[in-house]
Image (cartoon, rainbow, N blue to C red; front, top):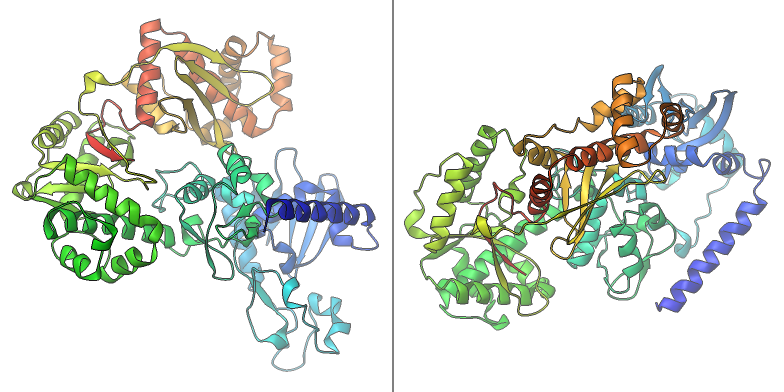
Length: 615
């Protein structure tokens, strides 16, 4: 499909939507009329029951004018209530209320609704004795008298799959992605928790790395970064809501898809455990280690694509220490041709740079685990929140056979010092991997701490019209704000040396702690403080706001606080407090703090260790 054809289709859909919205009346479609009249209700229902919530409800009714209260009737006759509030809805389910501003309570509400859906009769079913009509049956009674006419094949939603027998006319939609899903952070159990601030960042990374996506119908596709450039811009700016409109994602064959066509796989939080993304990463990194072994030990020379045979892979696998299985690696190397250049060029770069034939290839081995066990002990002793990938982002390790029995020290100073010595002796080399488009190059990080780049603090920019505060430095800027509603506070770096990097609140506090500065309070604590109108918090906010943003009197400030939502308050409070702290320092100290933050983004903190990056 050409770009012109895609544009024409989008325009046609928008015109049709506009026409429908103009003709919609309460008499013609009560449910859609109410949802159109109350957009926040539609957004809340999407958060609670996915964008396909209409398939699970039979009606929505306004039951009270103030506060506006909605009764949501499920297809099985069960019901719950949504009560409007200026900042968020409150859900009342089975007699219990849930504040949907609170992420944990929202999750409980989602679970409670799922439990309601399990009660009563599904649409079209009958009891064991006399059949009883449920609410959904009543609405479709006339349709029951004749077999339901199936929609033409092309009009069926891609994400709908038959759940039960056709005679029940009950369909289950496959869980799919939505803008609300992209905004969510990864849970503590996810392998991506320390890598991305939210699921949208993971989605963007998969596009850039040409990784495959699974659609709701089970199809695997790879998106074309060039053809999907506009959607990439929205992902980069976290303008996720616009991604829910139209078919904005184009695959390598020119087919266009909307966000709802993408399946919510385990890597995007479906709750089914570790899934495709983690498995692919494991196989990719294990495969690279095995290919390295072909160059280092099987052939003993630089290699070409023709050397990646099942025979060579099998021989190399036997003397590599990796976590993925041999069959998975052979299949991956054979089927993922887009990775062939990366596998070959990476192995050749490493062999030319570190030609020792006694180097073994490790990925997730017991030896590698001993390295990170020492890191965790050092982290605990230092009372640090430093993530392992910011300490050392190596994906694979090259290990000299002579050090396999070594014990690693458990303080950052001693551990990092030992890694430098072993690197200089070419005995232990941590390697960070990236997909290559050409020959690639190798860069060394954290070998000489004295050579770490230093930056100069240049001030701040914070305006009353937005919820962020920008710290300026000689190479760019860091924008501090909340990246998930009223939570997940972090700084996004834009500059020549660290464009696209991020620093979360834990590492921000590590930098503040190491420089003997007051720490930022937890975002959830700030939420609770604003909800309860904590005067100490508001006074503290006034001090930083009136200094950093605008000089206003307390009466005007209190009116401002009352007019803003919780997300703005939390984001603006934390960002201005940080700016206030840094701006009050002497210039040399300001430069040190800003340099420490930027070093974190490039895995070059005072506590980071030596590694090489192939890119």
